[in-house]
Amino acid sequence: MNKPLSLAYSTCPNDTYIFYALAHGKIDLGDLSFNIMLNDVEHLNQEAKKGIVDISKLSFTAIGHLLETYGLLRSGAALGRGCGPLIVARKGTDLNDIKSGKIAVPGLWTTANLLLGLFIDGTPDIVPMTFDKIMPAVTSGEYDYGVIIHEGRFTYKRYGLECLVDLGEWWEAETTLPIPLGGIVMRRNISQEIICRVESGIRSSIEFAHLNPLQTNHYVKSHAQELSDDVVCQHINLYVNEFSLDIGRKGEAAIETLFAKARKRGILPECDKSLFACENNN
Image 1 (cartoon, one colour):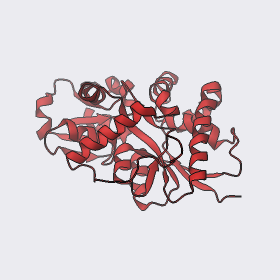
Image 2 (cartoon, rainbow, N blue to C red):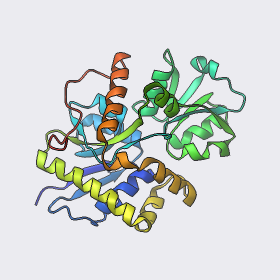
Image 3 (cartoon, rainbow, N blue to C red):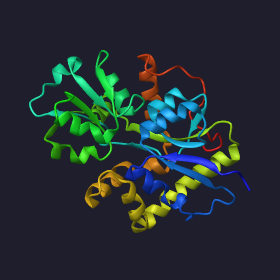
Image 4 (tube, rainbow, N blue to C red):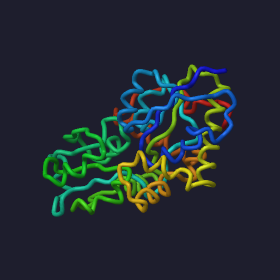
């Protein structure tokens, strides 16, 4: 029997939906077992610096920093179109003032913060905080702008905010590619056989959820920040898609393009390691 693998993913509906079957023994993984931890994705990004967790959901910015230690799995990722972060502000705020404004971001190593850095020619005045605190902080006037992710796409108007820029739309216009938000990584010093089994297991877990969506409801809603059935459903439908089952060639091109642009700007370090952890699944 293999020692349990440590597995960390976020509390967001797309992740709890993806990992429901794997976490609840609904699929046959042989002698593989897991010690599971859930937390905000930026917490996972920062914890991954220690290189201790075997398998983790990370923002692609964090993955770009940690490729020496971790390789990407082809299943479980969040990529897509029409799903990027939004720059929001109180009504009447001028986007042209953003370089001198205070901007709340959902973490230093989030893809949202990376995209903001690529969008703005300069160094923005950013303050990191958990994503659920950003909209109230902008509404109160504590911050001039906020970069929001997750279910914030569907709820920002409730806070009296307006969207100034859809960074996903901007990315797609610049590159014609889907936007890479986050992915599942494994430590490179784990055996190839186990890495590839986990990758296949995550894919099977997604397929189970697609066939049995009602079974995932309690688990998803028990961790969701936004408990509205409609918002949870929209979140899952947007972020769990064909790229979640397999990143594919187009998804791979999107990730490599993001990394290349960020490296050119000095936001991410150069690295000659292969992107993927499982070398046998090309």
